[in-house]
Image (tube, rainbow, N blue to C red):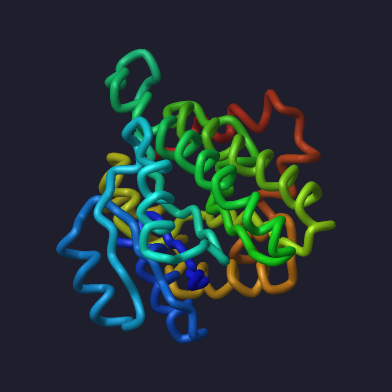
Length: 251
C-alpha cells in the first residue's frame, strides 16, 4: 500500500497551504474537497497528488472517500482534517439545514475519518492525525453558537485521541488558529470586517505552526501569540464573563 497524506478542504485557504507545505516535505497527497476544478489545479501545482471531488457533509461521504483511497492501493499515513465552515447569525434565525450541514462536516466527517484511519495506523504502529479546530473551541460563541460548539468537540476529541493513540506510535494534534486570511469569513458572513482583517494571520504561517506542532506531537497547537494569550485567558475568567465578551464581538 502506498502511504499518502489525506488533506480535506483542500480547495481553498488552509487546505491549499497544507497541500503545498506537505508536498515540499515529500508527501504523496490525496486532496479532497467539493470543487474539482480547484483541486485539479492544485494537484498539478504541487505534483505527486491526486484529487478527489467529494462533499464530505453528505451521509456516507467519509466512507466513500476511504474506499476510494483503498481502491487506489493507498493507505492514510497522515490525516489532515481541515474541511469545515462557519455561519454567523442568531441561532433561531439561521437556516436549520445549513446548521446541520455544518455539524455533519465539522464534526461528523472529521470523526468518521479519524475512526476509519486509526485502525491501520495502530496496526502499523505509525501515522499522524492533525485536526483543525479554532480558538473558538475555548469558549462559547453567541451569534456563532453552533460553529464554536463544533470546534469545542474537535478539540476535546483530538486531546482524547492524542492520549489513546500515543502508546501505538501515532501522533495526534489539534491546530487552533485564530482569525486567518482565507475564504472563511466570506462563507460565514462577515467578509471585509475591518477588525478581523487587522488581526488575521497569514495562512502559510498558521499551517507551518500546525505542522511543527504535529512533528513535536503536541496535543494542542494555538497559532500566534495573541491567540495563545486569548485561549489561555478563558481558563481563568468566569464563564459568565467569557461568554459576554464573546457575544460583544462585532463580526
